Length: 595
Ligand code: FAD
Image 1 (cartoon, rainbow, N blue to C red):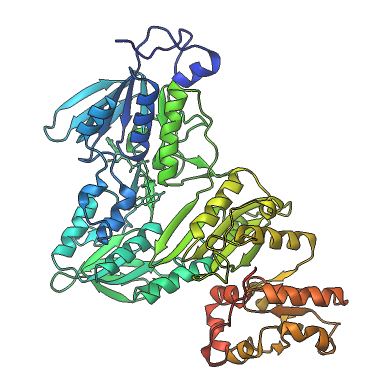
Image 2: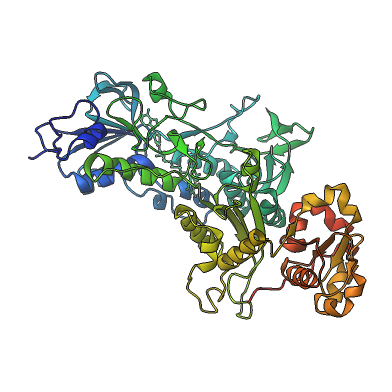
């Protein structure tokens, strides 16, 4: 049997060898031990086998399951995935047979000796302890759900969702008759589980510390998700936290909130986030950051020779800000696992920084993000611009057109910094285009020029991504000046001329207090009604007609004219309370679509 061979110049660490040597073919056999047999670990092992048929690959997983679909757990809980077996993509036996790996489920690694290149392993079924030598060690130990230090989290009704046993425990609570659920945390997993439990007929409440759901999004972009949750009957308790849980009467528990509310529930899901599971790495003396995430270099080396780490356990570099971050996403873990295999057995790898591209579906509303949000950039002191638009996902005249709420964030030099979108269809496509644009380092000029596939059922001759680029170009060139919700708080706003350019019906249905109504098509004939010596703040439903009005006024000599970014749709998402000041509680009118 031939073996994977290392170069003779190897001193310590496979990757260090790569840098100095062209060839790795000497007579030292390679044995790679992988700790963690799910996303990152199995991705490494699969790629490693494809590149190194003769390497010895041992995967040690403490859980009973390997290579399962943890991203699918909420959908199994919600009965959208009906067969539990569908989650279990492989068994240790099938992996051993297909990829000639030694996959050991129920084997927990209890310590790592990075000097002696040995891990200690406990076989959980027997209690047997044994040592396993490695040439290279790959840690993919994942993350652990954070459980807040509040009373009552040990009660049997209080659960987390990370693994197959976790979902089994939740299913058992449902089978035992749980009718009410409290989900603590409105991040991706929290809202997915809220949806799942609602599908199962439970009365569901969400408790979230932030004043919005999906705190990764800018607040106005989370608004649609909040509406979707509320529309589906999920109760939202925002800007508060769970402070204690206690056994109530019968099967139920009482969840006490910081604002004094007490929620009675049969099931509590803790979904406030995860922390890197790096107990082993810390005990082994590997360098970790303040959150306990393993620090790796661009080749995914840890601080110890011949030890790599991937997945939720590691710190990554934010591609927009260059700061260090934890981004616990499956795509990253999979690519990092593959990258380590390439580093060891292929052409080497340099891990790119991450944009944190993510997507979630909540009761038919899709929300997605890539790059940094506006609020994250501003809190990092990074000056940026943002534009909002509400185009249809495909030609407006083609049946089934639905709006996408799209926001892009960009620098003064035009560099794209982030994007977010919500809607029912076409969100995934636009965010994936924008994620690709971010990876390519594109500017808003590039977005304007992208050639995207178009026929009426699929998009528009000017795709929403092109439109975002056009609007951003207009902002940077000064062709368009935007005003935002925050301007309402400026004392100077009160002295401006507020101009509503929507139709008469829309204006009658509801308008901002103090607005003067001149439909945009009448503007040229009624210019005398617009004072030239004060700031003019124009708005419409989506920001398109107000842009047209702005261009008329600017070209006729008005100096200080600004158009409401994203129109009333965005304004009311940012300031929902303003809806009350609209006549008869009506919503803004029909949204013109770019053709
Ligand atoms: P994991 O896949 O968690 O694997 C780590 C494994 O290491 C675990 O099985 C653990 O038992 C094992 N382990 C830890 N310590 C030891 C030890 N000492 N000895 C032996 N074994 C050990 N991401 C997305 O991008 N999109 C999604 O839609 C999405 N949905 C998700 C839904 C849920 C409910 C969850 C929980 C996660 C979701 N994720 C999603 C995140 C994604 O699953 C993770 O980012 C990914 O699994 C991380 O891979 P990993 O290899 O780092 O960790």
